[in-house]
Structure formats: C-alpha cells, structure tokens
Image 1 (tube, rainbow, N blue to C red):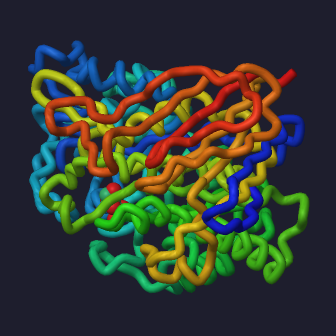
Image 2: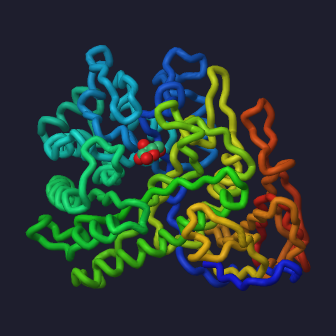
Image 3: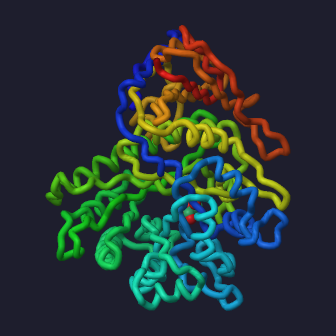
Length: 505
Ligand code: AHR
C-alpha cells in the first residue's frame, strides 16, 4: 500500500517507508509465467530438439538457465487463445503417432510434438508448478475430466493408466486449472455470453471438483471492470455446498483477469499499468459484492485475483498471428516496473499474476538460433522477482503529477499519475526494499527519503533515452549497482527504476 499526496512540480518530493508496518503478504505466485502454443514460444523458444543448445528432452538449456534466474513459481499452459481448439489427447503418447492439426487461434499448424508430458517434464527441470487451462471452445467436459484424471489420477482408471503407459507412474498433482480463456472475446472459437459461460463454468467446476476436490479452479473473468466480471462472480461464487461437491469445498477459488497496456507516447505508456491497479480494486469489490449478495459465509476462503495475462503489448505493432514479437524499449521497461509496483501495492488481493509470455511472444526473453537476448523489460522483472517478496509495507509519496492524456482514456478521471511510482516490501530475509519508478523523461527528482535506517544497496535500470532498446545488437538497458548512505535525500534519475535495499536497524 502506498498513499499519495499531490505536490506542485516546484516542491521537493518526499517518500517515507515503514518496514515495521507490514500491510499484506505477497503471494510468490505473482511472479508466474505463461507459455502458449503461439509463435515461437514453445517451438523455437522452450523446445527446439536438434539445436546444439537443447538438452536430451529437446529443451533449450539457455532458456531454462535464464528463466531459472527469475525463480518462477508457476507457469500457465497451453494458452491463451490456443486452448479453445486444443485437444490434449493429441499431445500425448508416441510422438510419431501424434496428429498434426490446423490451429485456429493463430492460424498455424500444431504438430503436437510438445504436449502435456513434455510440459510437465519442463516444469520439473525449471522447478516450477504447472497451471493448465481447459478447452472451453471445442472441448467437452468429458475431455476435461479425462485430462484431470490423466494428470492427477491415482486409481486403476483409463486415463491414469494412459499416463502410466506413456511413462509416468506417479500423478503430476496439477493444482491450478483455468475454466477457459477469454471466453468473452469475439476472437474466440465458441465465444460465449456471460450467462452461457457462467452456467457452463459452474457445471464443469462441480464435476471437476467431484473428481479432484484438491484442485484450485480459476474462473474466466474479463479485465476486472466489465459486467462480465460482475455476472460471472455473482453466478459462480456460491456458499460451499455438499450437493455441489462432496466435500463442501467452494467450487471457485480464483477469478482471472487480463490486461495488456501500451501507448506509442512515453507517459501514457508508463502510466497505463495504473489501470490494472484500479481493475484489481474493482474486481476485489465485485468479489465481496458477490459474496454478500449470495450469502457466502465469512469463514469460506475469499477468492483471490489471478492476473493470468499481463504485460505491455501493442497487437498492431506486434501482431498475434505473426508471433507477437515485441522489441521493448526503456519506456516499456518502466511500464513493466509500474505493473510490478501495482502488484506489490495490491498484494492483499492477488493470488497469482502471469506475465504473458515467458519466451519470444511479447516476452522479456528472446531466442535466436545461437543465444538468448534479455529485453529491456527483463531487468525490472528480474529485480522484482529477486527482491520484492515477503510482505508489502506501508509507504507514502508526495510529488508532482503527470497531467496529460492517458491510455486507457478513463484512467485520467480515475486516478492520479505521480511522477514517482512507489512500492515497498520487507523480505523474509529481513531486508527492506523500496522500488521507485521516475517516469519523467527529462527531470531527475531530488527526493527526501525517510525510513531508510542504514546504508542501502542501489540497483538502477535506465538508458540514454526512453527509446533505448536491447534488440539492436547491444544491451542499451541493464542494471547499474551502487550504494547510498541512506541519509537525507536521494536523486531518482530521469526515466529510471531505482531499487533501494537495506537491513532495517
Ligand atoms: O498472450 C497472447 C494472447 O492474448 C492470449 O492467447 C490471449 O488469451 C490474449 O488475448
């Protein structure tokens, strides 16, 4: 939580941070990833058999090594839009017998050489948990139940035995499952009305939890601000009921929302993620409203928000059917830093957030045949994932604001857009961390900082200008390390992310 006081641009900004006042726990799953059968994410990204960089499974070792640096707790798979026509059975068993099929989300051909068992193996090597998304387009409930049984079944049953026959004796125990992806979208095969979706989601949830009550089921929301979100929550957040599921577990555990932000102008681009903050607040209220209206008992676990697709993406400059390969700038890196500040500030409500996506497709990590490239957006993600864990702590910022247009437009009327975007944490290691994004293109801000009681390590992410990019053959944006005695004021450089880290006395 960060409170804010608006100053005029001439006044000296001030930040205070209170490491002894934790506000809420940060779920480590906010640093989750996402791999979809789209563009070069799977094929040519995480999986490239025959490449000198691949291991015996065909997994790119350089990609695994890079992703390990991010300490990713969960990875969502296999989509995205791809799910709406994906039949998981096509992707298991002997590879030479797997069918190639036309793929309707991105209009390619799916060879099915990478499927459930390959993904599970990859997760094992990366030391991360899988999160699978059901096909709510052409898929059936029978097929979904079959997939759950294949992954988690322990009995002498058909799909559990199919898994054993395919070489995996023990169940995978997949915990996270999504009830479809963006089923509201006109681009979706079998787009649904909110009424049709809610009915189907609830019926599927009942059957899936009958088969495995231990799973976490994630409802398909929109962007958190839509009547779709209100309706689906109202219809599906019900009191746990043994007629609906044998062990009286709630059917819905999380509500998913998606948002991609972008603008070709720097300041609207850097402030756009504040729309996600408002969306989280609105969704959180809708969750409470549904619980109130449906009489859900207070002791029933309150669903959290699963922000399972987020990032900077302009689908016009990086088209989905062309693989959505963005070349991110420093401006985009600052936007990603603001996104991550939002997640820290809103940690009370967030159960998971998956950056879309983990490799090549709108990703901070790119591959060529020979190597990986860390885009500008890699660096804020790396710093946050490394240090901004534990608990969110109280902070306050007083500074001037950007007053121009925003993207989306409604943001201007809804929130302030301060020059300094701030969040703070206290890690389980006892270190406090303060992340400050100075979005101003020209102005560095000498800022009074209160609450840093000892010498601080300083990590700065910046570049020559907001257009700096790492995709032109040189790393123009990276991390610079320095230190600060923690006394008086600190100057936050123009267009930068600064992370200050210290041990409170
Ligand atoms: O992440 C790229 C795509 O964006 C996903 O497939 C879809 O869910 C969203 O529209």
